[in-house]
Length: 441
Image (cartoon, rainbow, N blue to C red):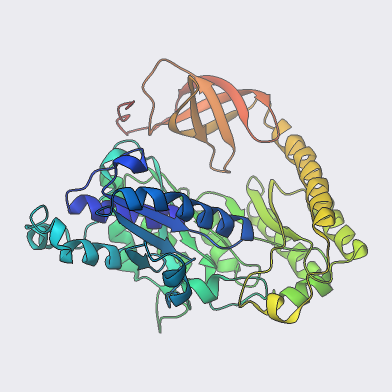
């Protein structure tokens, strides 16, 4: 979501005539887009803000913008007192405070005197930042902002606000704009993406949105995340099964493998509910892949309860497990009402243990691709090799002298590991009708 937010800010700044620079010392505007889901991310944001102070003092005309979850939807008087040298504080997903500040700042008045005309021309269109046009093959598209589920550990409802779905027409128009700029894959985003449209009376649901995006000719693949076990319906799974552009890759967090921990997290399902969901997914998508999220060290997670999480991951053998150590976040129920009673050293031990387990599971799953051909959407070159992903989100590397950015190709897998596959180019996919985009340095 922050990647999408940052693209939106960059796009709006370019409408005002700004261009990106790789170093802050050369910038007229610096935007720090923040995440506070974990304490480590918030600590890094504070550190970066402090490091920018000398630059701001040397160049007082430089505009410094703090954006995102650190600010939150209600703003923060405490942050404004702590960082008086920050010019603009912007809530998540909202570039308007910065844009309005630049328009109203006398120092920029001459440079952007034709702003109203530019906005009149561009209104309603989504333009990627110039440095990403023709380079970005896969893009993130927010479809529902905020969250109303309120898990006890999650800060998102407090910082990003209640669930707010975008209209189907607005989303489809944005995806068409992205396709016209070379994007071939979109990922529809929501904190609980399955709840798309539920806050709108008689609004379209995610299944209908997927069908509408599926009709856009130049889009070759569609993904969506993150799902929630309570809202992953059979109707949605049927659409994934039926629409060939919708990737059979499901991200559905378990968070824990113990019923008491899940109850304390306020997740709304049991471990057996989650098992049955995985069975339903695999029954409909036998060649698909599944990713999960796990939090270790949640308050009240005894060694026995943790072991049940370990056993669940070992049993289900999911393709990917995104692991995190519990970090109490301000305002959340777990921070206010529960004791953070698992020592940090124990959290790290459990984290490493699950990490090693998942590495073994992922290696085992990926090894089944050895000698097989897979279809890859080529994204870019990395260290001399082409890089892309399968529809099941497997990272694939291969070599070729052809210009293949944005193309669907077939690769025979010659080597597998826990995190990626490597192989040899066989051919471009049958029916490929896209003109490969140029490789830009």
